Amino acid sequence: MKILIIHQPFPMGNFKLMPYMGYHLKEAGHEVQLMEQLNGSPFREEYVDAVASQNFDVIYYEMLDRSTFELISRLNNSKRILCYASKGIFETFEQILDFKGEFYDSIITNSKVMFDIFQNNNIESKFFEYYPAPLFESEIKTLDSYKHKYVYLGGGFQRLTEPNYQLERDLIYNNKEVVKYGNGWSNVPNYKGILPPDSIGNLYASADFSIGTIEPSQRSMGMVNNRYSEMFKAGNTILSVDYPGVDFYGGEEFLSFVSSIEDFSNIQPISTDVKSRQKDFILSKEEDFFNSLKSLL
Image (cartoon, rainbow, N blue to C red):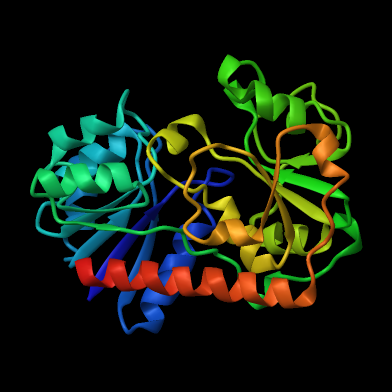
């Protein structure tokens, strides 16, 4: 098949993930091209014609900006598969139901809640538990520049002020012991800047401990954040904020849950055996993901 994969620009979330998807689909024998989303830029009719003329069998993407979704709506000669892992431009997750046949034809989602809704609305859909971790073995090395005790990779933005992130602020954002990387941070201690995309595995492999969080909207929909996949694959000792009721689908075996700063000092680094088992765990989940995606192609 001829497949177009649309990705976000750096340093947005799936800049690293989508080329990794493309690599695996190429390995499976497909012809794959990548395209950066428009990010709100207008497009001419000639642009629509140019993309349509490529005669893609499938277009794969996550939530897009409105301009790129408008483009997608014009490309209805291709099968359009949406990975629905955030509500993006919508106010609620359920709003996506109004755009069947316009913004997507099929959906793959890590929300068990939304998967059941899609099934009840006769939308072709598949459920996955964990994202693939877009890390190659050559990118998982111990480097002196990333030898921190505690690291957190993620975005700041509204999380620095909104009330429903108070626990994360107490444990991570305002914690001087935690080194932060990512975008949208200001006036927080130990912020080191934006991490190059090919350094994610090196960061997690080099630090003593990494910390995982899940967005409130993700938790409400039964989603596991993609950073957990990356931390599992890098073989890191993972501290996770203790979110009651979250289903980690077996991954909880490899997580050390924290609800106070005092909990940090009680966590011991995992053994070589546990590192191996957690890597095998996430690789099996990656295989499950690609099997589900391929069934939609």
